[in-house]
Image 1 (spheres, rainbow, N blue to C red):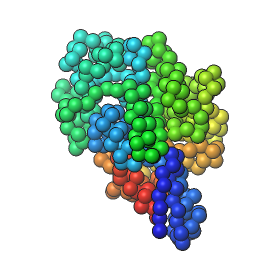
Image 2 (cartoon, one colour; image 1 turned 180 degrees about the vertical axis):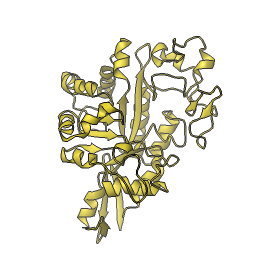
Image 3 (tube, rainbow, N blue to C red; image 1 turned 90 degrees about the vertical axis):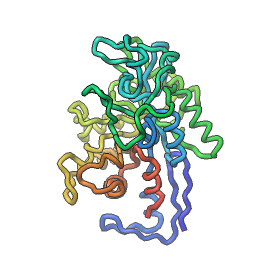
Image 4 (cartoon, one colour; image 1 turned 90 degrees about the horizontal axis):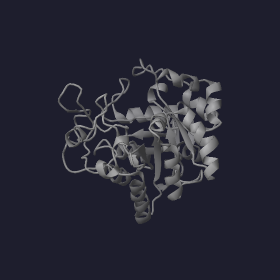
Length: 351
């Protein structure tokens, strides 16, 4: 008999008489429980495989699909509102060109920081598109159709209220996983986005390590500032996660010395999956780095991105196999996914 209970960070599996073989090692009963109990599903921009990313509809769907955490990418408006949007520009997910044709900067882009919240409310959000060739084409052709139905931009506070409201009405404890986007850019625009985000977290009761929150950022210097200055000044202890891309500036963090530095101010890492299973890997011959073991040796959780059923790497033939490799064989602690439903189903099917 298997009973499953979701408690924030943990999916606790109570298994009796269970014997499972993993990588030629036999896991019996409690050992198998310990292998899977901390695996989490993080809804990447919500249930973005099904609805336009970062809309409240996508977040509500992710909640219903049993995500353990729901991600919020955060940028700021001209009137200092913290907005949930992946980019600090608007022209790849909204109709801003049609509504405000004269508000682009010299580079042709439309930046969130140039608009008030009231102006942002006038925009319609749609599935992500590419217009580099003139016409708009969906980045993911089989997902929600462009410019259909009605979606809009929302604030960080509104999204927290949605998730906390659902937690109250369902009795669950789904967490939030905000990302501070482009802090250096915002600082250049006169905005301290990190302080603004922390004030909102504090206002909504996220201030301790045990709370259902991770705060992530790609900017290593900004995370150090948050750890050393902002959190102590506000008497907060929010868990921090260093995002790691494939760019050269992140390579230093992949060494034992670099990981030791990270472990002095963060609680986890969020690497690109390409930093774990390296490019050039093929089925039956995976080039797996030591990044996960290195992070675990320093007490850090590992939550790689981005797991998509409709954008599989060459070395797997289906999505379940991708999850097998990362969650089972390699042993990451959770994944960012556009498809929280099938990822949660995978975890619930263990063993």
